[in-house]
Image (cartoon, rainbow, N blue to C red):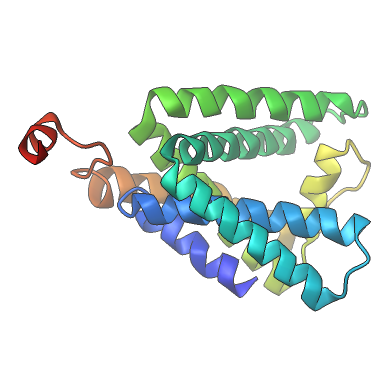
Amino acid sequence: MNKAYSDSYILYVIGYRFFKSSLFLLGFLFGTFVTYIIGSNHADLPSWGLVAVAVAVGIFCGLLTMFVTYCGLFLGGFGLGFFIGIAIFFVVETFYHISIKWIPFGVLLGLSLMFSLLTLRWQKGFFIVATVIIGAALITGGVDYFIEEFVLINYAWQRIMAGDEKVDCWVSWVILAIWPVMFILGNVVQFCKTGRTYTHKKSKFNLCYNL
């Protein structure tokens, strides 16, 4: 948890400036989390074995996304669409409760694929937004863990599964408010400072010079 919490600051503040590092972190976090969740529900491994397998898969996914740039960009856009979908369900839940399970899955999948393609097309802008929203979400999740032990994470999972669980404590909503605030600040920092003059693409001048 502490490792993911520290990685979130890299994505949040200098995600595009350290482009390759961000690609690795996206693949590593995705592979580790998905493997751990699947393994904890379906594998009979001890805790240390499950963690070792999850980290090994995470390292492999991180190397893949770092060296195959389009895989990393696709994954970043996928995460952007996923968290935008989660934010939409948070807002919708205050007005209407979705009880059909395929609706959240369909919306999340559709948004994730759409933003993946958009990130492949307009790489810099969408990748900055992706790293900021993912980093801000991880930071918010870290605060939620240390204060309430995953109340908001469980609430988000209930929105994905079209569950009935509610959040009644005002503290949870204060923690949730960290996410949009940090999202706005992170975009300002990266677009105006850390990522303004940097580009991950090789210029034609450098290419001709190397030839």
